[in-house]
Image (cartoon, rainbow, N blue to C red; front, side, top):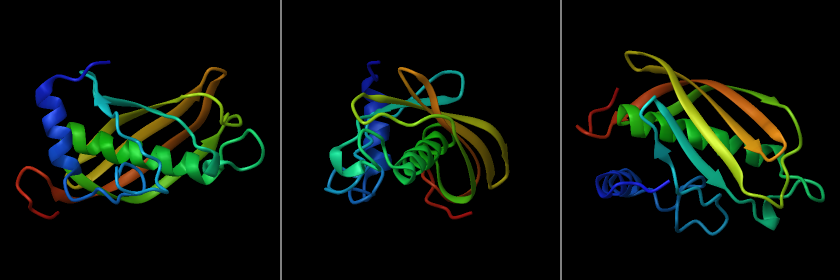
Length: 152
């Protein structure tokens, strides 16, 4: 999916100052390297994730904590790209459906379900070629509005 130039500029503005982020930071050598978050017109955000050998749990399977971190990052980007706010995770529930393979690109998708003031309810999922790997449902709190810089 090709992002229009204005979306690329918006994403770069949002990432400014977070180069060391474990989830999306380009300058974090041990991070996940998630970088291709793209919003859709229906309130979702999509991205891909290619696991590295150091993300392994046991042979051939992605560590469950890395799955959780990737889903949490997807939810944060869902809030950033659709609501233009930085959020803090207040509650995150996970359901693991099947082992996540190490040898393929995994798909991530986040959805904003509801916003009430500074509270956002969102869901996300990670899928492989075999189907849904894990699902997340969470409550997030607005930390800062990225358009105004104002805190919640």
